[in-house]
Each structure stands twice: as structure tokens, then as C-alpha cells.
Length: 320
Ligand code: APR
Image 1 (cartoon, protein in one colour):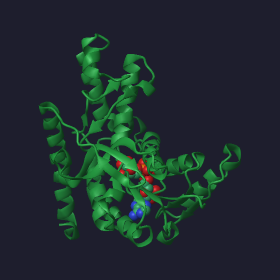
Image 2 (cartoon, protein in one colour; image 1 turned 120 degrees about the horizontal axis):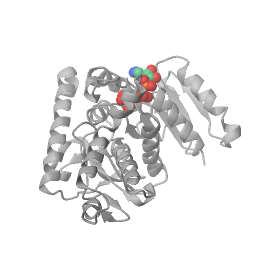
Image 3 (cartoon, protein in one colour; image 1 turned 120 degrees about the vertical axis):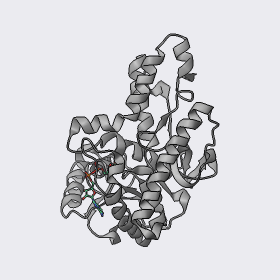
Image 4 (cartoon, protein in one colour; image 1 turned 135 degrees about the vertical axis):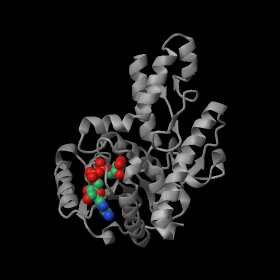
């Protein structure tokens, strides 16, 4: 059987890391697409030359032609610009919306059966626009944010409790921005919910509140340190986890930006929710019940994403 084909649209910091991870995990052959001449070709060759030491056979190709993504099983989109210190993800909207139009059209023409994972920010609005421009089924287009935000939350919690991150589960709801909602009640250490751990005296409410806020600011913390771009190792790893769930039909329960059609009270837009990812793409949205405080935070986040979608419609009439 032929190896799966994974098209990476955007061969920058995240795109290059995605290519390396895809090859090392032997998920399939890689096509790196970018408008910048030489970058995808150079990265593809460089990574291919790591194959003999690493022991993978995956083929890698760099290109400026959408024809090369033909028949891709998975497309992961990072095309666009990242933020610089002082910028919010929302500041990228105008420029990245134009990029989503060309990428959406390219995928529609050459890889209409692919499972598409968008990473470009502002995530929830860009994945919505990418779906609109591509016309692909909603269950085959999603956005990577929740896995990353949850991974950040899990990392901080594992450090606080001094336990393995393997025993920490967490998820984050809502938009991938300042309004995201790290769910304290549904996050656990070995199945024990965080509020119970506070009652047990293993941590304090103040420390937990600080971790929640650090999770919300997780992207900005990295931007502030790097100064020349945004996070790329953990975002790439998170998207690979989603791609692997699809390619191997794992039925993973992962939070991601998915199209809601009534679930969690949201209709007709993308926002971060718990999903099941398998061979059918986004096979299910886990329709959890929120308490009043969580619902208020989630509604606030949904409204922020709605505002960005309206802004997209204002910029590009074809979306209205
Ligand atoms: N088509 C294809 N590639 C494009 C296009 C386009 N129309 N426009 C820009 N690109 C490419 C750039 O040439 C660059 O190589 O997208 C790549 C983006 O790479 P980086 O600038 O290194 O950005 P990266 O850190 O990878 O982040 C990409 O993901 O997390 C988000 O906020 C982040 O929106 C940003 C995106």
C-alpha cells in the first residue's frame, strides 16, 4: 500500500517542524508548499538527508506548485504571518485572510478529499474562512489550538504537582485567544479533578488561578522570549497528534476548533470544543454540560470569535 501523503501548506517555522516530525514518525510522504522559493525545497532536502541517521524512508518534496499536493490525505496549513511582540493573534487577521483564500482554493482544486488542519492565526476565524473558501465538508476541516493550549496547561500542572505529565489530563475550551477557557473542573491528576486537589491541600486556589492565566498567555510568553516569531515546536507536535488520530483512525478525544451545529449552544461557526478524531475526520463533538461560570467564559470567547468572523466578512464580500 502506498504511503499516505501529507501536504504542508507553509514551510516556515511550524511547517519545517511538521515535516521533520512527519518523517520521523513515518506518517507518510511529505510535500512542503510555500510561496517563498527555495525554502520548502531546502527544508525538504535537509530533512531527507536526516533519514539515513534516523532510519526513515519517507519521501520529502518542496514546491511552489499546488499541483504537487494532488491527492493529499492530510493538509496542514501554516501559511501566513506569525505575530511579533506586542501583537495579538487578532492583529494578523487582514493579511492571513487573503492567504486563506489562495490556500483554500488550492486545496479545493487539488486535494478535496484531504483532512485539513489549520494552524494559521487568528485560528478560529481563519479555519472558518479556510472552510468557506475551500468548500470542503465541515467535518474534514478543523483547527489546531485546543491540543496545544491543553498541552501547555498540562505542562504547568505537572510542574506544580511534581507528577508526570502522563497522569495529568486537561482541556481548554473556546477560541484560541485571550478569552480561551481552561477547564479546571474537567482537568485532573490521575482522574482527581483540580478543585478536589485544592481541597486536599495539594495546591492553592491562587496557584491554580495563576496557572490558568499563564495557560491563556502561553503563546504571548513564547513570543515575548523569541521576539522574532511565535511558538513552533509544540504547535507542530499538537497538529501531528491530530493528523495521526485521523490517519490511524484512533478515535482520539482531542479539543480542537471544530464546526458547531448546535453543540454547546453554538451554531454555524468554529470554536474550540472537545471532539473525537478518527478516519471520518471530526467524527463527533462531545457535547459537555458547562456550569454557569464556565458557560459565561465560553460565551464570552464565542462572542470574541464571532467578532472576528464579522471582521472577515467586512474585508472579503464573498464570505458575507
Ligand atoms: N501561500 C503559502 N505560503 C505562504 C503564503 C501563501 N499565500 N503566505 C505566506 N506563506 C508562508 C511564508 O513564506 C512562510 O514561510 O508561510 C510561512 C509562515 O512561516 P513563519 O513565518 O515561519 O510562521 P510560523 O511560525 O510557521 O507560523 C505560521 O501559524 O501559529 C500560527 O500565528 C502563526 O499564523 C502563524 C502561522
